[in-house]
Length: 341
Image (cartoon, rainbow, N blue to C red; front, top):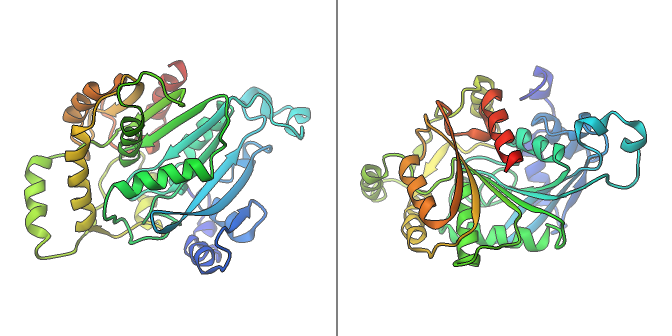
């Protein structure tokens, strides 16, 4: 994901951008692609979309939700489809070309926006402006690292992100979520549209969505005991993708948490019970699931999702958990499935 070793050693690091954003007295800090610290961040995570699509405009902004300062980013497209991007008269046009709507991306546990370049590029090529943010305790946002008191705080963060950052009017509004991001989106849908078959979203795609973790019937008792003796465990980095470069990058990513807080596990356990009790809706969701996923209890999860929604499911033979960063053949199958539905 990093183009050169020099970019690993860049002086303006992601940590420095984090400090700069949250030490600023400007409570609504905004950066664009010309800002040196933000440009360094974009280069570090290979998110400089102007290298592929010159019409793209980058924007970073800070908003407050769930008691934290959360960092949002937008990638506003323009003429981005492959057949248009090489046309100088379209690339240089001051007006967006054929923008179909917006894509809202919600990342997974331990993740942040910096790791979602493949999905952002796909959305831009579909002529969707992209809006995404780092959840509390993740990436550039504040909060105890990888921890939360209640999953309801994630709902509050998503609600405020949509209200404060995302355009109110768009021809299409698409929702994309990976793992815990899928859980947050499902909760959002069931909490707001129970019993309905319509919503403001024209397409919802869930990548390996979390309902409960793998081996949860056993592990929930293990964590119930551990919470009396420790506040956190050392994190282990799972082989959750066939993309070895991604796996190596994550181990050295400066915005990654190094522990698994017991508080997060407790909040997740409470959410699992609450989610199963939520009333269903009739909304169609696209579910993409790998058969070699050892992170979530995917067979159980798909059963619950079938009870709650009207899902269209793509089963990806041998794919692992981190689908938005799986190897290219899996990503292509997923994106073809989303496009065709």
